[in-house]
Length: 205
Image (cartoon, rainbow, N blue to C red; front, side, top):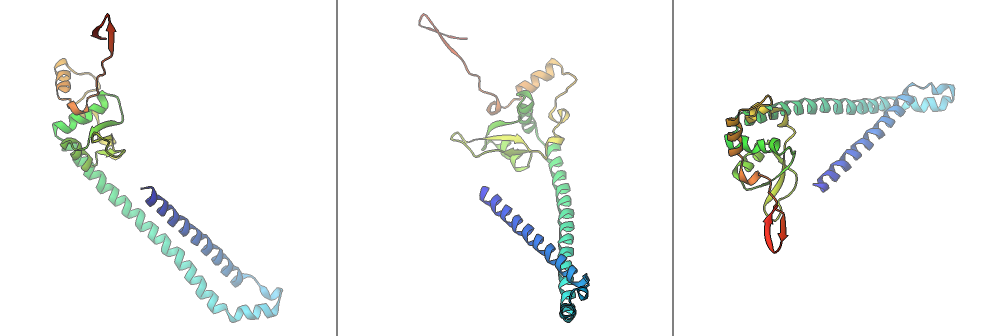
């Protein structure tokens, strides 16, 4: 990933250097075509007049390069916006069609008040949410096969209390019990038991 980023940065730097060079060449061409060199030297003016047709061709080529780049940039921007709309629509559709196990898993982020959870990558529910783009992985699987996940930035606007079956205004005891009973065991935080030894006896504190 870092190698790809470095290559992309190098490519952008090369393009920027080329554009800067083309700007200077264009400015120089315009200057040669517009500055009245006859004031300084008749001989220099004569030489420039002899090459004036080539200078105009060079100027047309230089301006065409900038126009082409502008059109490509407009096209790419329009295409990216269209792709983003399609991607957002697909994400919204995935969120609206989540089953109860997927909603229960996403509720863990709210119940545990955490933006990141370590989950088993091979768990079907986790895998479905990952493939649909609702969850995004933040690292590689560890020795236990778990991966650190967070709700993707693209899906966050659609993950509301209502979607998760929660209510910010308040819930009945029956609703709370149902939510707690549906919590996936693999996503619950581990409860650490402290060992306290008193007179040789083990007691959980």
